[in-house]
Length: 306
Ligand code: NAP
Image (cartoon, rainbow, N blue to C red; front, top):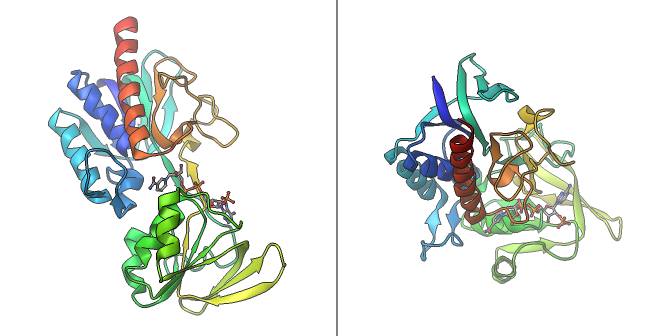
């Protein structure tokens, strides 16, 4: 079956692209490997997405976007992309289970996955105290002590969320200043259940069945300390999900997809939107903008080439 547009990835960028292409009456298919929503699904509360003045939960926002896209006829299937053939005018997308879908255009909106710290004990205790998702795992840490590693928006936002459960949340940051936006910093500093440990890096995570100790090193004094915690939440940035595009379209040195301002990647008929592409600001608001732009650029491409 030939589609006008195939979208890979069901976060805000992909779902928005789907809303726009479906409303433009283009035959559209969205392939999502897990469940629609992407990173937003693992964000407890969103308060900087316009239109929701009281804020909205990540799950609810994702479900609303999905319902809106389906209402206009977007077909959504679950599957993982194994291979792409993009050089011909008709693109072929092969899934892990062998199904092959054909399309006139492709929009890649695969987002990014949390980076690992790569310290001893991280893999061993993953799911047994080490986590990358406060929304998913926070409730297991009621009245416990937790370390959050990182100094960006994710680290601070999730540390504040974790104080709903934990007795104490230590934010461990490698520098003496946060990267996160000022309003999150103000909230973190004002929260009696948050203590910041500056200029420190994690060296090792230890425990028995589950985590009980985080070993830290102060990068200035070189002093090593142990922190007794039952949980370690890691928020040190994201890696784009672009592995399957290597050698096909132009990626930058960090593997983000390079596009022009119309979201065109380096091959005709291939577009990218959201966190997987090179961009200045990774936000739901900008992902949504990318999705709309990619959809309209795909429509124009089809008009001119088919
Ligand atoms: P980020 O902004 O890249 O921040 C990563 C943090 O981890 C930085 O503080 C960095 O330290 C630290 N870090 C990186 N590698 C490390 C390592 N090996 N060891 C220790 N610390 C390390 O990532 P993010 O916070 O996940 O955010 C990703 C994007 O999503 C950003 O564009 C962010 O603005 C956006 N976002 C927005 C919101 C919101 O608007 N509410 C919420 C979440 C995320 P340095 O500062 O020293 O580099």
